[in-house]
Image (cartoon, rainbow, N blue to C red; front, side, top):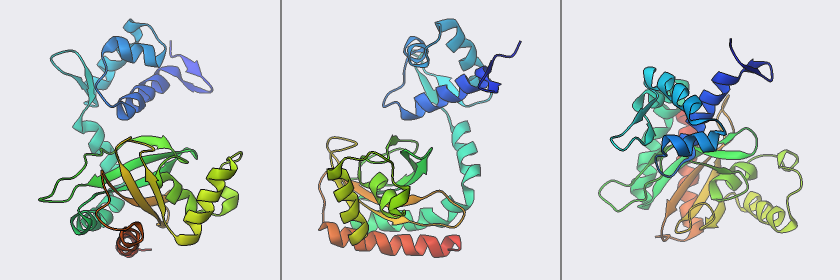
Length: 234
């Protein structure tokens, strides 16, 4: 019998939740850790994983730890193929110009920012920041730049006055900044990225130290965002 929850399949929901947990995890979890995060018995998590493995979406290493596989990347690429084809060359160019890792983040479920793609500078020391990384939309420059590009009425309710003031400043100057809010050692500058028929997004640059002034980095990112929008048909 198929389990149902909220008008849908509980089994499907749990399988999707496993993929979300793995995408957000900083390290590959064990089956017991995954079962605990999912809130199910180990045997249930194991059955779900066997199905995901059968479809080439997850795999276990020699120590039994679970990782996402290239099969999921293929699905993600298919869902955003046009955007990735339009944006990736400019993302690489921005990373090389700034000497910083650059990324595109998009709004997810109204309250989170998720990294869609990233590029590190070629021939330079960059920061690894993998696609799928998620964090609250109000924390970090990529998320706040997304909000800064939206009407104030679209911002989440109940924001504290200090955060509201920061968002107002970001909207007024056209870019957001953060220091150690998502990853403790990283600084970030981000600008809104508006693309037709796509979720609200931002273009960001991250590094341990900023090699240029924030305004100068933001200006370079704005140029990249304009070129991505034109390449995408905006």
